[in-house]
Length: 92
Image (tube, rainbow, N blue to C red; front, side, top):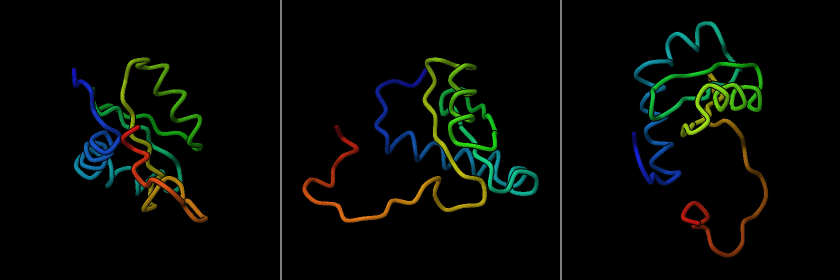
C-alpha cells in the first residue's frame, strides 16, 4: 500500500498507468468517457461521467487513491478565470 502521497504524486502515477495500461484500449472504445484509475491497485473504472466513475471506483475500493482522466482529452476539466494569491493549493 502506498502512503502519504501528494496530489501531484497521485497524478503522476495515474498518468503513467493510463499511458502504459489503458490509453490504447480506452481511446478506441470509450472516447469522451471518464476513467478513474486507482494508483494503488492499478485498477480502473470507466463511466460516461466523472461523478459516476469516481463513485463506482470508491465503491470498489473505499480507501483507494484515484486519478480521474477524461478519455481522449488533455485534462478531465478546464479551469477558467484568474487566480490570485497563493498558487500552491496542492500542498494544503
